[in-house]
Image (cartoon, rainbow, N blue to C red; front, side):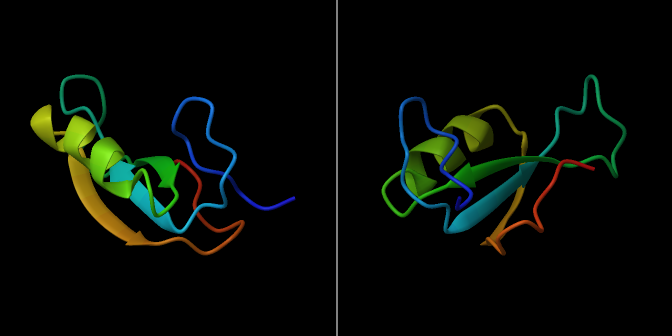
Length: 68
């Protein structure tokens, strides 16, 4: 099974890995990952960006993007 988008109810294959952290609870080097399909990359990125959590958006490599 392919890695799927993290948007609620979406079952599309992930194309992007949105790497983020919440500086109030995570160490600076810690990265959580939300996966995004083409349709949800912008909305998920905007949600994280508005809170100052988004650190980078990179192309998703299946099986490689895990929270660290």
